Length: 531
Image 1 (cartoon, rainbow, N blue to C red):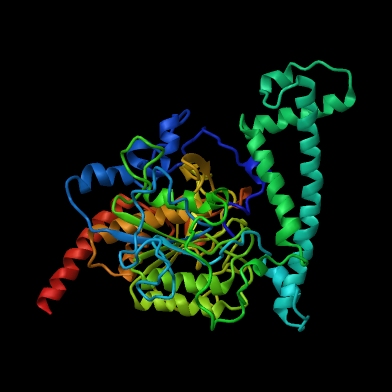
Image 2 (cartoon, helix red, strand yellow):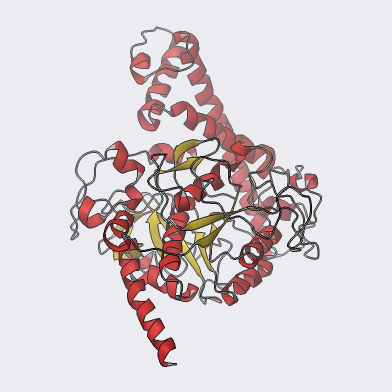
C-alpha cells in the first residue's frame, strides 16, 4: 500500500503544521517564527546550521560543492502507483528505453515487455485491491499463526473503519449543514464563526466545523474528501473479502511462471490515481531551477516509472518482478514507498533484493506510517527475515522527520526501530509534482524515502565508482546526529534517544554525504590503481 494512504485524517488534524520551533538544548538554533512559503516548499533542501531547519543541506551541495562539476546520468526506478510522464516538471527527466521503438507494437529489445519506453505497468487497468490480510482470509483456514494474525488484524481494522465511517458521515453532514446555511460550497472560518442561530443542530455543526477548519486549515474540504475516500475504500475494497481487484488483470499472483503481463501505460488507467508515484518521482528529480513547482534533489536522475502499487496492498509477485525489471534495465537506485504487514511470498521479494545487490543496485524503502516499532512488528519488504540479521547490504530503510527541530523532530506517524530503520529524512509537508501539471504538499515516510533516494542518486552520479554498499554506508554515517531525546509516535510521554529508534541515530545530510563520498571515491580509485 502506498504510504500516504495509511495516515488518517484524524492523525493529520493532530499533526497539522506548527511553525513554532523552539530550541531543545541542542547545538543548533531552532527556527523562530514562521517559515515563509518559499522555505516550506523546499525545507527538505535547507541546512540546519545555516537555515535552522532540519533539512538535508541539498542547496549547500549545489552552491558550494557541485558548482561546475558534471555528473553522469543515473536511472532511478520508482516502483509506485504510476507516474504522470507528461507532467511539465517531469517530462524532461524520464528514462527512455533507447532499445525500444515507440508505438510499433513490437518487443524490439526482446525483454518480454512490448513498447516499454519509460517503464512498465504491472497492474494493467486494475487499481483497487485488497489488503494482504484480506487476501489471506479468502483462503482456507490452515491454523497457521499468519492466518490467525491476519484474522485478528482484519477484525480490528474493519471495526475501526466502521467507526471511521460514522465519523466521516457525521463530519460531512456538519459540512453540508454549513454549506446549506451559507448557500455556498466554499466558506471560511470567519464566516462560520459569524453564524448566529438558535437551532441546536446547526449550532452543533457550527462548532464541529470551527474545530475542523481550525486544525486542518482553509483546505479542510480536501482533507475531508481524502478522509472519506480512505475510509470508504477500506470498507469497499481493501477489507472487503468479496472484492477481487486482480480479476481485471487476469494474472495469477501466486504463480511466478508468468512474468510478463500488464502494459506500458505507466500512469495507469486514470492519471489521478498516479498521484502518489508522481509526487515521489518529483521529490527525487523534478526539474531544477526552471521556475516550475519545486526542485528535485538530484540533477542527473532519470525516472524509470514502474507501476506495481495499487489502492490496497501490493502483490509480492509484482514487487519482485518490478525490482528485477528496474535492475535489468539499468537502474542504479530503486525507490520503494510502499509497505504491508503480511507477505505470503516474501522469498520472491528477498530473492529480487539479493539480485539487485548482486547487480550493485541500491534500494531505498519507506519505514511505514503506523507509528510502530518495526523491530517488533512486521513491515514488508525488508532486508532481514528475523528482524535482526540483514541478508543484503543494498537496502536502506527510512523514517520520516518533521521540520520542528528538537524533541518534535520525528514525524508523529513514522515507524521506528533500533535495528530496522536505518536513517531519518524529511517526510512532513513535502512539496512536489502531482498529476496534470499540479503540485501539492504530501507527507509520509513515502516522502522521506525519495528524499534519500535523491541523495543516493546524486552520490552515484558524481561518484560512479562507489558501490551500492558504499553509498548506503555513506548515507548512514555522514548524517547529522540528534543527541537529545525525541517524541516517538506522536506521544509526548514517549521520548527516546535517536539511537534507540534508528540504527544510525542520524538524519540524512546531503552535504556531509557528498564530502564523505568524495574522500571514499579517491581512496577507491587509489586502490584500483595500486591493484
